[in-house]
Length: 120
Image (cartoon, rainbow, N blue to C red; front, side):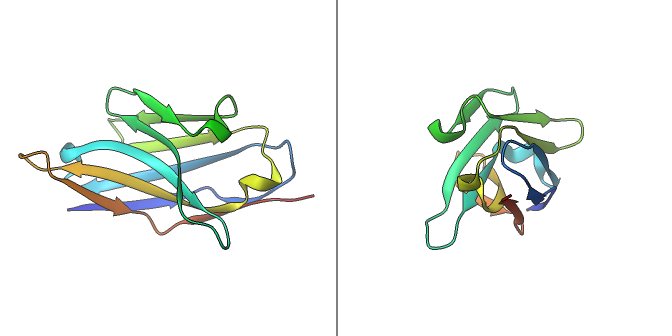
């Protein structure tokens, strides 16, 4: 129903910035939230930030004040602006779409992941 393509990762020095993008296609009208998760080696995937179509947002405590999620409904795209990056932000970042059917049943869709490496 929904396809996600995420991009924007790369290598950046501590204190630097990076902007991730995720474009959704398919039955995008059914998407409730879009967001970003990340997974570092040896760790479980964790929520980074989410945004509803009305741009109500939620952030992990570890990124509050540094990361900003935004959503462009016209482009079916969600962004993650990452500032003041730290080595501990190093992970594969995955775009997520929370899709709801007419009965509010949830299905999750995922992008392929984009690598963010913060290192000097």
